[in-house]
Image 1 (cartoon, one colour):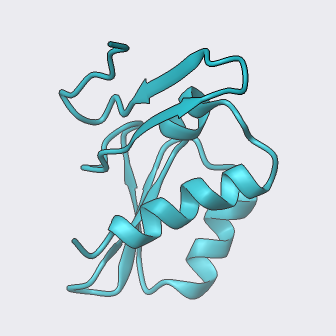
Image 2 (cartoon, one colour):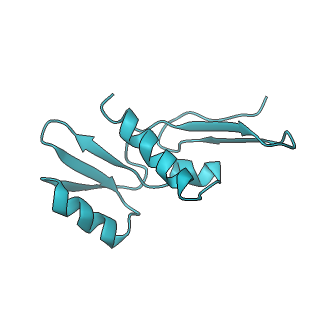
Length: 99
């Protein structure tokens, strides 16, 4: 979909900024682009300066409830000690389970 790349880029940017907790990466607020009118929809939880930045560059900024996007991200990783870390996006009905 139109927002898979922006959602993945948001998660990678947070990871590059130092966030290394998969659960926190997944539940962080997201924004999405609306191709129909070039506006953005922004989940609750962004700082005011980020919202102001959206307002400067987007033709419209529309609020959404926390976890209101249709994003579906799951993360599974294995640490050097082989302890698995998994996280599932609360925006979906999915779950991440260790097997």
